[in-house]
Amino acid sequence: MIKNRVDIITMGCSKNLVDSEHLMRQLQECGYEVTHDSETPEGAIAVINTCGFIGDAKEESINMILEFCQRKEEGDLERLYVMGCLSERYLDELREEISQVDRFYGKFNWSELLADLKQEYKPQIANERVITTPGHYAFLKISEGCNRRCAYCAIPIITGNHVSRPMEEILDEVRYLVSQGVKEFQIIAQELTFYGVDLYKKQSIAELIERISDIEGVEWIRLHYAYPANFPYDLLRVMRERDNVCKYLDIALQHVSTKILKKMLRQVTKEDTYALVERMRAEVPGICLRTTMMVGFPGETEKEFEELIEFVKWAKFDRLGAFSYSEEDGTYAALNYRDSVSRKKKQERLDRLMDVQQRISSNLNYEKVGKTFKTIIDRIEGDYYIGRTEFDSPDVDTEVLVPLSDGELVIGNFYNVEIEDATEFDLMGRIVF
Image 1 (cartoon, one colour):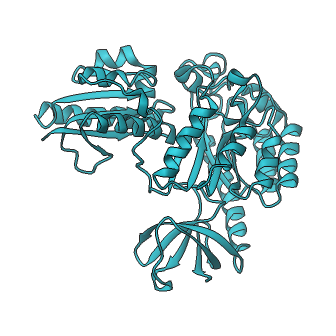
Image 2 (image 1 turned 180 degrees about the vertical axis):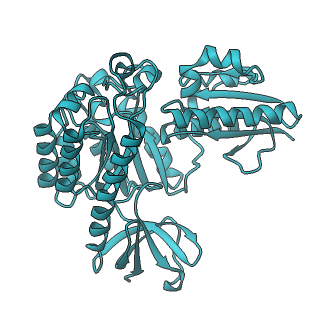
Image 3 (image 1 turned 45 degrees about the vertical axis):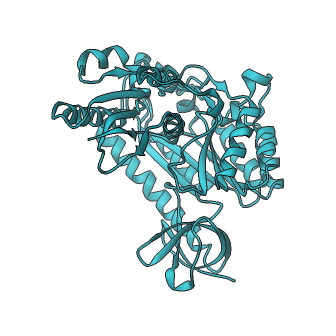
């Protein structure tokens, strides 16, 4: 056991990861040795940053807590702290059920952990972080919470209303990250299109992205987690005009049937959704659209599911993730609807939807063969350099494989790669000098 070491474990999404990175920087400044997601945790102190979004994620977080409780009981750990979404949502229950944890914190009061370690939070480094991703890219969180009240979603219950970070604070963080070697920024929020409404009384995401793109050293900006209702179309102009704003948008549409969208409280119709996709493709030629769909929502019959299938075939999304509806404590759907679609039927629909998308993704990848793309190199794996184009976000999208025999490439640098072959998930190419 290493006395002055803190092992931090992050569960769930990239927004949690950003919180962990800020905590790590504070702990470093206090003189601690800090590790993240270590395969061999040996510190006297452990901090688990939990996820509480859906059932599987909650179970995974609980299992991780119990694993570290066991280490504590065996004398391999002195103090165990838990923070994040799960403890924000189930604070009282966790305190009662898992007494081995020294203290539980919610999602927003993790800085109190420093006081419990007899340390002071240092506001002068509030915008500094320890980057746990490869050093050339980072996630940039621009807000917390969500004012949308989708019927199935527990996030507003956990995080509360939307709270935008001041623009100057975000820009200061970008400048700091650029000084640390970051070139690529994944802009994240529960719902980024609402950015600025609380602070500036208008949707300000287009202005923010424009100002970030003006900062020297910012080479790629990629946008995650948009919302379809009241979409700020000025953002498309910025994407079209700015070379360092990737033609990529992650926008969760969830469904297309007006009946289901209404029950989901999504504030859009089928006609709105078709028109939105058409306008995005018209205003930003070549845009890569990533979306998420849900099957088996209460009231979804074969008719509504077929509407969804036809829409996906029409839209030809570059990337599509999907999941089956599951009831979440305290949500509008859990309180007001009967979970009417069987587990078996949900799985059948999910399999069919993903089979349709698999063919679309494969075809779109094959269309890239013979074309050349600006590619950032993330790492070496086996006999290949692994990279991404502007249409690919880390961890979730297609990767570009370049043979090591192509020459000595620098991790984090950009190269032109001509695509020679493709599969559903990968592109294979050669460097073009």
